[in-house]
Length: 375
Image 1 (cartoon, helix red, strand yellow):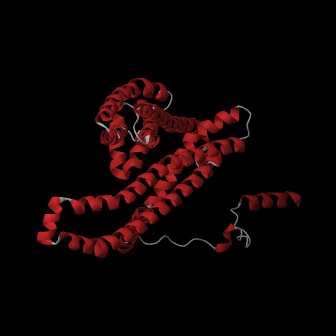
Image 2 (cartoon, one colour):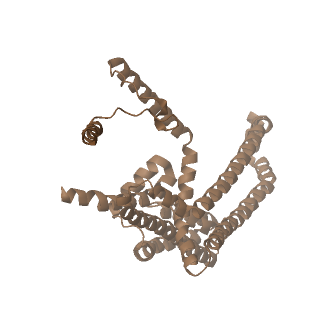
Image 3 (tube, helix red, strand yellow):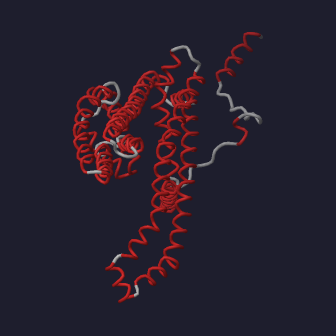
């Protein structure tokens, strides 16, 4: 009897089993999926139209928030540029938070010194101009030609009417607008510093999180390429700032020796404009030379000679030594990238274009070219 039951049991085991009922608490409790939607012309057009509308909405959102995006990108680049200093302090045994605090305090001190160097000369010149206005008016009133014109055409009454009725309200509106611009600049600077501090503190966390999105088989190589890109960007930002500081210090020493007024403020202008690729050093040189010419012709000529000589030293001696371990971009690519970046985002685009071009060149060299060689 047992021999008859055993084959029957085996046949039942070999027989296809009916699917089990889905577990009410499992992922299949929502039921079986239905038939795919019919891909007719109407559905195709509807999906395409929704895609176009979504693209337009995203483009408008990007354009509307472009200033915020630029602020975030600049803060990220500054954080990457300051990260080598943080890592250097961390390697010397200092905790990362302490290293970030020291570097951030240095940035704050730099901003404060910049304000202290710029604001007093501007305020002094504005005060001197306001105090000199009555004397200018008296000189104009006593001028023989102006007196004759006033007798013939009543110029002074018309001038008083223009000043009290048109120029005064316009100046008041302009002063209010200038105050709003200053407040906006202060708010933007504070926001930039806060974002930079956040990115500087969470740079490793952000990098590790983004690397988790890469397949594990490619994660090691992607990490190495990412580290190389960050090292190049950080080296470029830090090197560019160092070159600008050198230019500002040398200019300040020369202007102080030459006796040019507001030497420190003019040196800061040179340091800021020197950050701009290609034309920044020339812009700073022209501005400072023009101010020196207004002071005296010999000082202006001396400034022109100094800047011509210093730019040769910077281009052929300082720049190659500082940038030799940062970005590896040919001069032609540098010019093209700076032009495109300036056309897209102005000065900020020109500043960011060169490290971005270096990162793209590294990705092409490490990922695209090996794949093409194996094809």
